[in-house]
Length: 84
Image 1: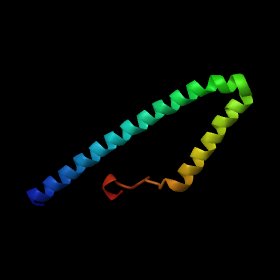
Image 2 (image 1 turned 90 degrees about the vertical axis):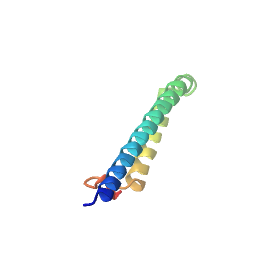
Image 3 (image 1 turned 90 degrees about the horizontal axis):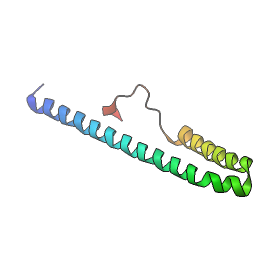
Image 4 (image 1 turned 135 degrees about the vertical axis):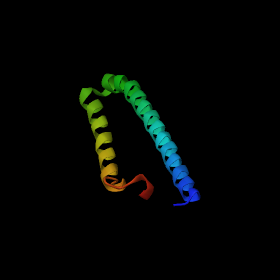
């Protein structure tokens, strides 16, 4: 393996690490936004529609998310980062 090839593989590895860190940052931000949305919408829904409607709304949202993940996100188990 030449030094150019080693350098290229090393640079690729660092790009993958940076992309992974960016993806984790986006995921954490989305979690904060989702928590904010639930904490601000729960009291009004509870007051005007009741506990069943509040839990029903969030259960429906979770079911839609599960459907999306099962059918639109591809499996990555056993696949190396370089092959994605």
